[in-house]
View 1 (tube, rainbow, N blue to C red):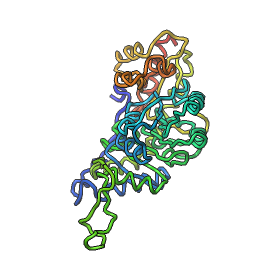
View 2: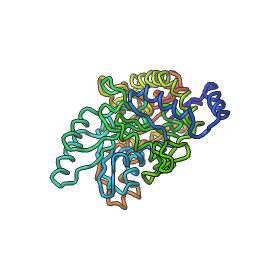
View 3: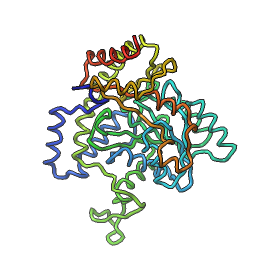
View 4: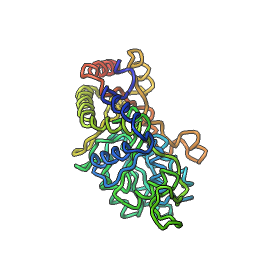
Length: 388
């Protein structure tokens, strides 16, 4: 069954063989597969430097530290994301605030963003870092965000966990043309998978060097021994308080194999998503995510939103679809309404578009296993629910 979940991984015999081969190599933790995967990722994203880690959450944490985020600094991110997009700032002792979303693209609203920046400048509460989220693989307006970063002097991290393979105005997401750092996730339902895993991308050598050390206990081996005055294999120094955020070579071997399929995955997802779009154009009660002209979405998710012409909420449609074994999910509950964040002072009514989205949006099945007839079956059930 290809539609009983909103998404699932695609693993073939080539992937399995690649992993088996890695298990017989000399090193199964930090060996050659890590380096090969990083090189291949740089080639695919057009970024100068790539660093693989054990998760995108770890990559976000390291990204914040690499940009020297400290206690009481301020980070802004999209309120419509997984909690990792904001938790990474809290790990550093920083303060977090959110930006409401555009109700058509589901990404941060540039209009709200500009208003918030003007107010923050007056109040002297401007962010040190803004973490933008390409929800569902739909690129944010990165050129406008880059211009605002220059005007208001903040750093930009792209949480591109959904967006491997996507492009913005002919610039690949991950190239860091409009940002300081980009992050990808390789969790099973993402564009490619390593089981668990993530990566950090930058064009800044100093950021890369610091992130590399933070990934592995804050240690460097690129120093001379004070005893022999030479670079020794056995000598190392701890420079930062770092972490064990390393990816194993077993995971990297799967990533190398999966990355070869990325273009195929991307074409299939866009084909299926375009079929959904055509069929939902017949339904005045639902809207699908708006992809700006000249952008290419990776379509990690296909997000449908019930519009204001209907009193139906997403959980009602989700319950109906479950009767036909059609899996759905909500991406996401607004972060500011999570119990932990309520304790930090956030309240219902703070970000109205995201709250409306959480009542009306749902992710419906989209994965490489699916066929056009699956898309038509799902669309037909949804359209019938609304009397179309």
